Amino acid sequence: MTARDRPNETAAVPATSQADLQRIGKELVSGLFIAIKTARIHGCQNSLFFSAVDNIHHRLHEAMELFGSLELRLTADCLWLNESRLRIGFESYNCFRFLIQVLQQHQVGALRFAETVHADQIRVLVEQLSVEVDLEQAFERLAAAFEHIGDGIEAELFQESGVEDVSSSSTVDRAEKARGTYLRSLFITSRIMESIRHRKDIDLRRVKRIVQDIVDTVLDDEPTLLAMTTIRDHDHRVFQHSVNVCILSVLLGQAAGLGKKQLGDLGVAALLHDVGLTAIPKELLGRPESLTPEERDLVDAHPRLGVVEILRQRSLSLANLMSVIVSYEHHQSADSPGFDGDLPNLYSRIVRIADHYDRNTTTGVYGEPLRPPSDVLADLLTGGGHCFDPVLSRLFVQALLVR
Ligand SMILES: [Fe+2]
Ligand SMILES: [Fe+2]
Image (cartoon, rainbow, N blue to C red; front, side, top):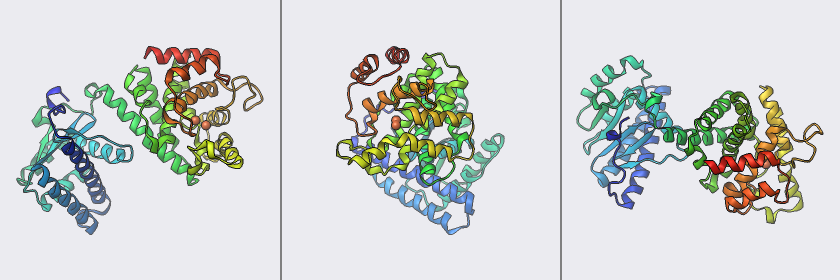
């Protein structure tokens, strides 16, 4: 990607048009995702495929009435529709990620749709994009295919436009990569929670991979990931809390001198520390003042419920065992007996600090009122009525203040 290829987001676009572009962009991305997936699974002669193509055509025609023409452009890890950079929610993350990968694999930098676009042209486009190609042949094959596609759709290929290969890590903007890591973490955490809720095994390799990305980003000293932990998203606060605690724990683990392998194990344990919440009815979270004593006991039991859920996993490893310990101990005072009767484990003491900070400043996952970060950091240094590991607390405050 080069700066000149990035659309000018600061160009004056009325707020209503921006909102329309965001909506149309999401519909277009999800429409292409469904059509390409349908083509790959059912083939291109199937009624499901035709209906997926018709849906895209219908949406495009509606959009043309507002904008006349549309350009969907790829820059690094971002998609733009006309002048508007499409914002990715975590529910739509999968569709965006998929389409970005498909466009990268096919060396497509931009797709332009004119008012004259018709369904057959969209069908040809989707058929081409649904082929899983050898990268070496992608340019030549697509250049030939798009020559015959007609006037309604135009594709700009990377080699034509001078756009560098965006899959090369040297060209990917670090901040955008960090944002992608955060959104992917939210998406994977939502899948973990769903798997556990339905008594299915979680994909631990996937968990380890995303935690490794978080560790790499923290070690890379990239501030964007930490900045993402301050975004408040009421609807997804349990997932967000898990991801934030993972990031903050890795940050503290790094300050405490842990190595990369230990940071990976710590990050997995931190990401899973609240899986016990999946056993609790959602309506009990977020209103602590109105819980009955029985409901309060159930919420308070989530560390032990988490132990049960993790032990249920068939692929137990040493990293899982650390997750068991951290789940059990993450609300224990630093001076009270932990899992084995001794004081809580180092990883549990780290996660407890990260957990306390995040839920009191950003996510309020159990319904806590949110407070200024400076007040919560003061809790950590003074104990604030709880007992935190004093050395780790100081390291945490220093780590946040220097960022
Ligand atoms: Fe918890
Ligand atoms: Fe927590």
